[in-house]
Every structure is written in structure tokens, then in C-alpha cells.
Image (cartoon, rainbow, N blue to C red; front, side, top):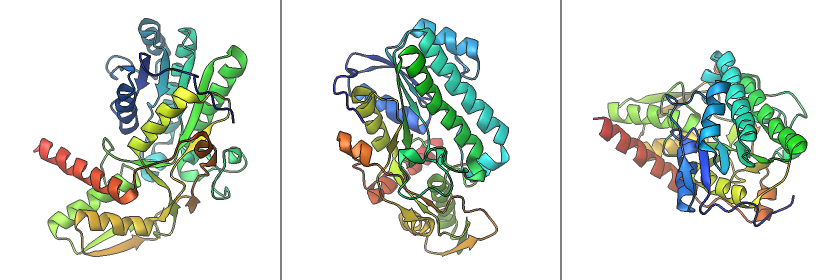
Length: 319
């Protein structure tokens, strides 16, 4: 994989970060600003990225030097499984409109962010980039995965046909400040933090979690992802997508025990085996990114404790 040290200068660049109010987008915006870039944003009320005319009008007026496609409809297993049309349509429209709008506005640098769910359910772990499209997807989040695969292919297509310097990166499971905390609609870490926090505050004797607790997952702090995105935007230029992760994983049961410790919950943890586990193993091979000189730096214990502090601070701000 070629490394282009001077592919794109962040300092002084005008970079549009879509989805800047979300966990990923806000982290990317902070990191790029630290690198000296001027970060451009637009609220959903200003631009509905699902609408081609609005996306193209915004891009034609803003004319950024680069675009980070961090906007997406996201959620956990329940949300993916119960809202398949929204997860497929919204994500397809957002990415297609942004990539085409960037091309029409002659924006030559773009980073598309996908998800590790693009890989087959039975992919060999650790999952290499070559595993893409080699087998069936996990059924519970296939709608989101199909949209993200399309985004990768759009970047490759615009690179081949128009010579655009568009790249794609696939993060592992993320957590951190700015996440959505809801016991049923959010991803596993914020959902657990909310549920265990509520149980600890109420003095509840037990908490029931979905599945068996046996699946293994790789978790990375969103600030590490943002740092990797800045690194790739500045230095990487190639058609192949890159995995972004820590290279380590844990069981969901281990995660539950860590969350219980952080939130001060000392009751019993039970598992509802009638609920889906999802993919049993999902740890990504990050050797290509490591070979370029980037590695995650935030330890899980440190990151989880910081995320819980952020959660508590937000709760206090809400009164």
C-alpha cells in the first residue's frame, strides 16, 4: 500500500466534516482543527444530505479543499434490525450525494468512513481488507453494511473514472464522548453505560444484557479514530480501503464487567439468550495501517472511564 507523505496538507486547508454533531464527526472536527485546518460544517436544518439538490448546492457554495464523510444513520442491533429501509436508504443517499457533490464542485480530496460490519459474518479473524465481499453478511446489520460497501465502491469508481483522490477507511466498534446513550437504540457500550448507571443509582439487584455474552468485539476510542483520519487524510492515497482499530478484542461479558465496575454497579449480570448475539468474532487486521506508522494510543480502561465522566457531565448539564 503506497504511503504519500505529502498527499494533502491539513494546515490551512478548508475541510468540510459532515455529521459534525455526531460522535465521529465531532471528534474529527476537533482533531482537524488542532492540525490547523479550517473546519466547515452544516446543520441538518441547513442541508439535508439525503437530498441531492441540497447537497450539491451546499458543496458548490462552500467549495472545501477536502471532505470527510462522517454523516450516517447509526444504531445498534435492534435499530438496524427494525429499521432496515431507513438504514439502507439514508446511508446510501448521504454518501452518494456527498461524493457526487464533491466531484461536481471539483473537490479532489475525500475520506469516506465505513464500518467493520462490511465484512462477512464468517470472515477469518483478524479480518483483513481482502475479506470484503467474500461471504454473506451478518443479517442483523446487513442493511447498514450494504450501504457502507457501496460507499467504498463509489470512492474507487470516482478514483478510476475521474482521477479523484478519494479514500475509504473502516473503523472497528467505536465509543467515547458524543455517543448516543440509550439502553435499546444505541451501540453496546453507551447502552450498557446507561443501563448499568441507572441500575447502580436505583440500587437494582440485577441487570439483564442481550445475548450470551460470548461474542468478542474490538473497541476503539473515537479520539483515536479521529487521529487516524487526520493521519490518512494527510498521508494516504490509494484505491484500497484501510482498517482502523486497536488489534485487540474482548468478550461482551468482559465488557459488561468493566462497565459495572466503572458505574459502581455491584449486582448480578444476567444474559438473555433469546436475543441475538450478532457476529461471534470481529477483530480487524490493522497491520497495513500500522505499517504506515499509525497505532491507537488510548487504553480501554482509560477511555471507558473518560466516557463515563462525559456521560455524567452531560447528565448534570441536563439537570
